[in-house]
Length: 447
Ligand code: SAM
Ligand code: SF4
Figure 1 (spheres, rainbow, N blue to C red):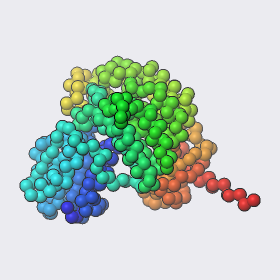
Figure 2 (figure 1 turned 30 degrees about the vertical axis):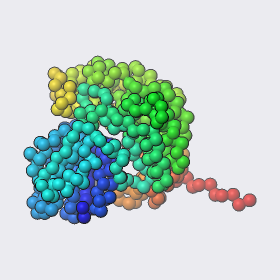
Figure 3 (figure 1 turned 30 degrees about the horizontal axis):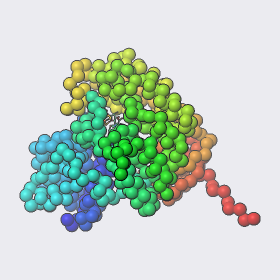
Figure 4 (figure 1 turned 90 degrees about the vertical axis):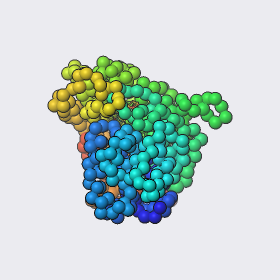
């Protein structure tokens, strides 16, 4: 297909990564990326379904695109991703100007669907199973120096609030060989940081066997092997599920120099009763026990988390237990969400949905507490010298945004090349970022 494309991505890193694959497919077909709706021949909205406002965003965006489609019937509008899988025919019923709806398992068929839409009108493919692993598709990486690597898309859990298993299907692990080949290929192209992606990385491998044996590959071993790939200086992963967390992962993190001192460890709630109703099969004390062990083994580690406020039936007591857990855990950062009922999930039909004003008030209190803890954790770093990897300029191009191994953003006044490593002394801290000064590299000895 000749022409230009524009991709808008909503949601998590998995979606960002799928967008890289979509861009790869379109580019391999001779298209090039543009930034403006007006100059695009194909517009892809790669959607997220995790919370209700994601639905609203999609239909809002489609409303804005209608005049463009009316003015230019050649324009192809594609809706892909989790909402495409969830809403299926509803999308073209509500927005008949959408040319292609492509679900999470049908991505490899995107080009064929686009061609068919030119010939035969609107197309939809929301098949339930993936035939080609997404990693077999070409990808256009957003960065030249860091990359996401999908290790096990899908999820076998059934957390009662979560739509992911419905729209992404069961977990399907890639083979270790396939993952390592991708990481080596990335390193050969100059990538220095990889993030391994899975909904529950701890159960990586349960559904495959190692090449030539009947043994199940383990996540801890995968971490060690990825950490040994020449040229890869930083390895990250997201997310481990506290229920399936095992000590061998802590050992692998502590013993593999490339694995960064950061873990995203989703708590969801500090109330055992709420955790039970969420079908999260760990309890608060077990969770906090894991944190203690992780911090003992890796003292410099930073911990981030996900928390949901206002799960159905959450009482004042339950919420106060979440505040206590957050206080005890001292997370460096947290993604905090107001519970959003998702059609098709068990919790959506639970009694006792918490009224919006109550949820908002609890949410504000939680954010206030976490911001204080994040600021204090950042302040503890002032005066320290840390390794940073430069990500790019700030939006106004005046300074540099870089990242520590512990996943904290550091702003530097100097203009530095994206992908370069430096030492920086931390001089100030706020809840969501640090400010640093470059520490000059020691001059080479002349004697
Ligand atoms: N697999 C990850 C795990 O088990 O922790 C989570 C993946 S999900 C894409 C990211 C986060 O979205 C979850 O950890 C949860 O906090 C939040 N989330 C999921 N469903 C939600 C809902 N219905 N309402 C509010 N937040 C939700
Ligand atoms: Fe959703 Fe639970 Fe699976 Fe995470 S582990 S993706 S929260 S069902």
